[in-house]
Image (cartoon, rainbow over all chains, first blue to last red; front, side, top):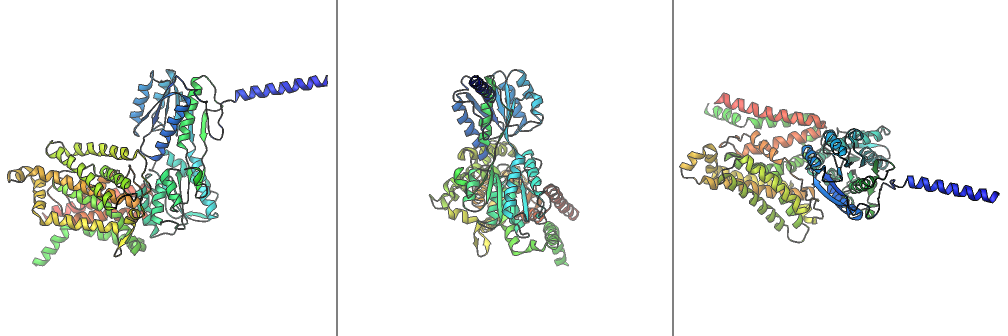
Length: 320
Length: 315
């Protein structure tokens, strides 16, 4: 009798576990979501990049192509040339032609209406890399991005650790008013609030993601100020700061992105490290989510967040 | 008495120079390190690229047009230089190829405008867009890394204590000033801009002059691409965006008239230095990014306004 009840309870527990497992089948593991090989056969999907002018966007492109090959879906990739009106037209034209559209919004507030229109026509709409404001209310099924605030926090935390919680720093930002840049800055400030002995000697400088502009600003600064660290919102500007300071300057110089030119600068000692923003993974996760939703599966969560990692001379070999 | 009049006419001619000196004095008082040797080197380096672009632009504006494509040309030639600058060939080759590429873009601009009768704005806006595309195409959108050691060292190095990149600029300034002031060609550029029809009637091959000014601007933009790649140590397809605006501003602030026919090389030097010093000074003072834009805009308009008013009251 006891044996039977033991066997029964084991069976019940196993059954429960199986049920639980099947309900959680499609969840992210270590920031990665996969629908399985060939799962996307027969689906036509459109992916709109904000632009394709830098290494980060090329990473997005290559990863999307690789993910589509694995899924077996028919993927078209277009660039919206950083113009919201172009992106709206591209989405309008995709309605009825494609089963799903993935896009990186050029402007978080401009694409709600057209997303709603596409969703109403039965398309799966997914935001990648960044999300529209109130995206859920416009029928957008899922978002796949890295958290810019977290990226900023990771970077500034690494700087604070390297400084031992004390020192003079300067910040280089993207174009004034850029939402990604503002979020990274928010991350910086979250960390700086814990370190009263880390002081910003100058106001954050707007270097518009540009290497040459950052190089000029930091050259000027270095003739008048002493810094222990220079914190840049992307790798390009960190390289500019590294060029101005010279290799192994003793100044901690950091960026965000993890692009090939950033890696080169880490290896030759011009910059200290970077926080990877895995744009490729964001696109791949978005594509897999689209296929799963098209097949009528359920996602554990429709907010897919990729992890970011601190990369410096010690672990750079793992990322190249 | 005659001397006095000469001095006062010189002052009104180069009033922008006085504005420049006053600005430098103010910045030096507010932050003494501004005129330290290290920062003077910075100013030379930072003025170099825009200085070369501005001298190319000077010929185009004096001839009565302007060139919106030099920023894209800089990027495209910079990418070509980077692709060839990995140590596989002597450094002179990427420099030559970059300048040749710039020259080609310039000639296309000039032919479209002089022979095709296209408005300069349309023609050079077209090449601005298309050449930016070529830059992206040439490198597949990725920054070009892995430059050779001596290419990287070029812009960072010094000759007799002067940054090498500034030596290039000084040579360009000397040649261009000579051409503009002392040659028949230079005078013909001025007459084309002053009155194109009159120049034509008086037997000047105005089409050739107009094509050649764009060719000079393109050639110098190509040289800037070569130097820019060395300065930032990577070839970037997005480099030089809106640099044409800085070059035009340097010319106009320096007294080159947008309606053509008027302008002096020394004015362009001062215009370039003024723009550089504003940006450099505001960085050194640690002024916030938002205020920098506002202050830069006001100083540019005010400098030209004072200059124009003085010239008018003298006339």
